Length: 85
Image (cartoon, rainbow, N blue to C red):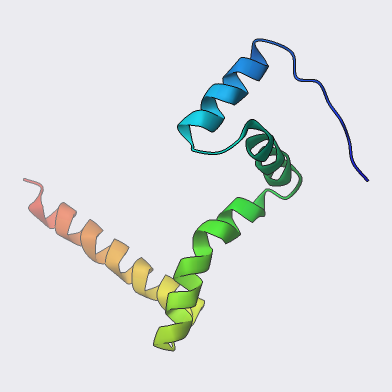
């Protein structure tokens, strides 16, 4: 199935400008925007994929990584509180 749409100006110009600045085509930009809209977690999965792959290489789980980051966050908060006059 395919859906053909017409994007009116000035939005079409904005799409073309954004695509150019991102080094992609207007069609690819619009398709990615639609994909992200119908699956809001898709972008997060794309961004997290390299991290998940590296965790796997290291033999770490996502839960272990989250616990590690939480501990760092708490340590940094304690340091900030201790540094306040």
